Image (cartoon, rainbow, N blue to C red; front, side, top):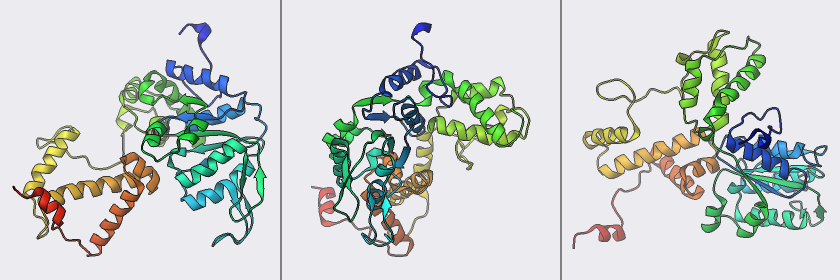
Length: 366
């Protein structure tokens, strides 16, 4: 891109000059002045909230409030109250009147993060706010009008959710006025050294220690990693390295990706094996491993892997079932049902392993 066409980051805390980010900066500057709805699209950790703040601060509403709501962190009923407020006595625990986030954002901007996790019932209410700029508090019939700009964010495809019937098509079109796609960090690797320097300086100041040097080997290792958690993962990694460096230079041997857990290794030792090799090793071991009486081999292996996968997704999501289900590509009700099955199994309420009549008929030889 010629120098005359380059765009500077709209805020000091936004770092990077990759072509994909140049397009983000261009769209932010175009989208900010009007009050049109903006939809931010990107994987978890790509910086959607930072971009939302940039749109707000460059807008005519910059002097108004910026209110953030994580739609994936609350149950539907609590989220409705959080967004629209409630009156005293409208439900158990409503001991006083409470204004909602839309009211609090009057004259400014409301940022609806993880909008893809909202339920159809709540989507109806959100559609009305976007169209009519009005709503009622939970337990009240009085209509409240607000002047609020909406910036929404999603880490999943809303088009696919519409096709699957999980997201209202009319709401999608209302949100998708100005779409801005944020690239994952693996698609802007040349920005990693700049981001690393930025975070190192920030956390050196936070922890009151000298700003350490980043060795060339470390920068090469950072650029080689795929960063599934994107900028957020890089930020957390650099803060951890600041602590481990203890005032000295940050060297590659301090760098450990992922969680601190023992890794399975190949039978001959050496580096950890790839996932297909690990799966083959697991199956071979499971074929000959002892298992509870009456438990069939397929159920023993497949259910065991599925349970560990679900539990790991929940751990990574901080036990947030909405985010875990999205990560797994699984329906939230299915995830809940699976966890209930595990709970009953742990309590000794083991379900029969015998197939039902329909399954038995399907598998029976002709």
